Structures are given as C-alpha cells and as structure tokens.
Image 1: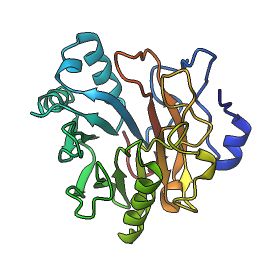
Image 2: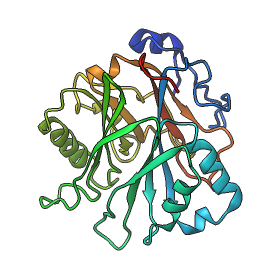
Image 3: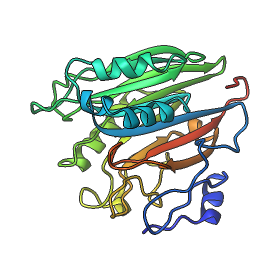
Image 4: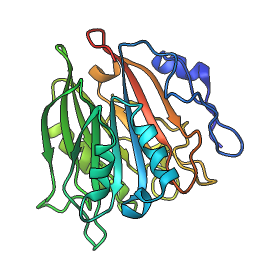
Length: 276
C-alpha cells in the first residue's frame, strides 16, 4: 500500500492532511469531507460512481448514500453516468435542491455510452460550458467536457473533465493536455477525472503531462476500492488554482462495492470573498 507522509504533504503544498489509510483499504475520516476548513472554503469533489443508471438509483440505501455525499460539495463531478434516457441523473438533481446541474452529451465508441454530470451550488454562477463531443479527430473515446464558473467577483474557475479509456491512457491523456493548453486559459484551471493513471494502465512514475501544474491528488493516494492501491482519479491544478489550494483528500467512509469501485477525491480552496 502507498504510504501518505504528512510531512511530505506539508512540504509540497502546505495543507493539513486529512486522509488515513488502513490495511483493509478503508478510510476512517470524519463524516464531512474536510471538517477543519473555514466557511470561505470552496470544496470540489470528483466521483466515478460506476455504471450510474436506473438500477443503482433504484436501490434505496445506495441512492441515499450517493445523495448524502454529493450534497457536501460546492461542486461535484460525477463520472460514468450510463442510463440512456437521463432519468437517473434527473432524479439525482431533483433531490439536490440546493444545487444546479449540468450534463455532457453521451459518448463512447461502442454501444456502451457515458455522460459526465456536474452538480454545483446555487451560490455559484455558471459562465460557460463546452462539450468536445463529437471529436472529429477521434482523439478520445469519451471527449472532454468543460465548465466555467464564477465563484466570487474575483474568483473564476474553469474545469476540464473526462473519463480516459483504460486501453489508451497515454495517448488520450497527452491529447487532453494538448487541448487544455490550446485554449490559452488565463485564469484558474482544474483538470480532473478518472484518468486511469496507474497500475496496469499507466506507469505513474513516468507522468510528464501538465508540467509545472500541481497534481493535488498525487501518487501517494489510493482512489479505488480494489485490493490493489491505484491512483486512477486525479485533480490537476494550474499555478493560479494551486495558489488557493488549502486541503486535499480521498473520502470513502461507509462506501462499499454496491456504491462504486472508486472513492471520492476532493480538493478545497480558500476564496476570501465567498462564504458557504
């Protein structure tokens, strides 16, 4: 198992560690994602909910857990939405009255299509979205989705998210990097998703993409429920976003394979002009 060194974390990003790993791959954390944070902290989560559709939503305990976790975050990105008619995501959004919702188009080269959903607090203003599907160059199985938010008068944030195909991680991740850099973003940017950047799919020690950016969910973290310790899910911050990072972690208290095979990964940011 990977070992999380508090001293190293403090040296790298200067934040308080809140993740504890145990030999049975569970996490013993407080019920809130980051209980020590100030009221002005913006909390962003990422969760691959694994084949999220009508069958999963129809299980009361599973569904309640999903809703209870999602409502903790000011912005949460949900990956691997699979239901064709959109009813599962519509139900989730209806049961998150303090959030607004976005969803990408359905994407995938096979009959199995996926979407990405974003739920964000009604205190946050959406400025723009961009769906890179269809991709005429066929660079990705599931092309990226972009959303731009205004958190406070001087704090805008751009998110790029996608679920990288495990069969072509290096190429798809490099193409994602190229796309993000080609947009010439000038503000705070976070690139996040289940990128499969570890274990059988990619050698995490050879990551060269997004040089000079901060991998806030870095190689020390385990983001999946399997016995293997793999950092599949990532949050990558450009320098301006990294300046306001105050905490990061992986949350899995009470989670089991009925909910997902991935834990929730999260970052928190200090936004002085905005209060939760």
